[in-house]
Amino acid sequence: MKVSLFIPCFMDQLYPDIAFNTVKVLQKAGCTVGYNTNQTCCGQPAYNAGFKAESRAVCEKFLSDFNDSEIIVTPSASCAGFIRNYYNEIFSSSALSWNIQRLTKKVYELSDFLVNILKVENLGASFEGLATYHDSCAGLREYGIKSEPRKLLQHVKRLQLTEMSDVETCCGFGGSFAVKFESISLAMGDQKAGNISATGARYVISTDVSCLMHIQGVIENKNIQVKSLHLADVLASGY
Image (cartoon, rainbow, N blue to C red; front, side, top):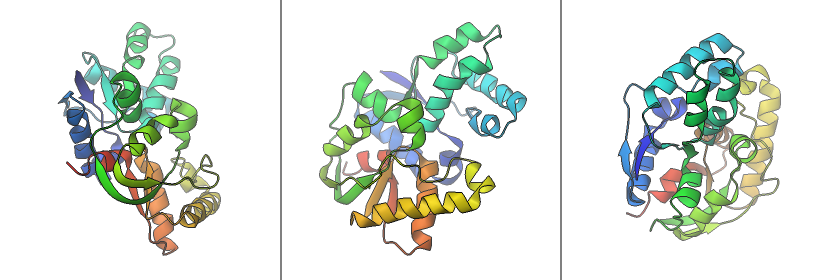
């Protein structure tokens, strides 16, 4: 299957290795991966900050960049959820609405695409260690994934997976929320870090790099010896 890869802003600028690992995973699953170097952003940051006109302009560029794509896969439940849930609203009275309806049906988060479209759960990965999984708000509540990442992780050789307490509780990032409500964000991050530490895990895994960036900052500040990893990092290990 030929897929077009969309890489979110955080990953492109700060964690490019995750993008390369995503390519490895998709190729291991039998896909031919295309990457449009003109791509930029899905429009979510501007939209969430209240800049609707600016966001729409970015969304229109996304539509142009991926208009000819058959399948669009992104290692970000946040971006995929935004495109699926908000593009129809942004372009509700636009001549582009038909294109938007077509586009939103072919955008997939990585784990959803692997498990539910390709029907692949075992990618032959191997990663040694005890890990816990963090459900991002975007993944759990907006996009609607929960079992899919866990199914993939359960097939990773030598990986032990343990659940933390209050696993569905927000980590406190929430985009600009972490800036506007710093004290609340830090308190939520402290709670998440405590729950992670209590598992005894050495790794925390998620589908959203923004959550992982926030969690990593908190656990380092608290001197907790845990490393955050994207799902693609683990699935690309061992081959």
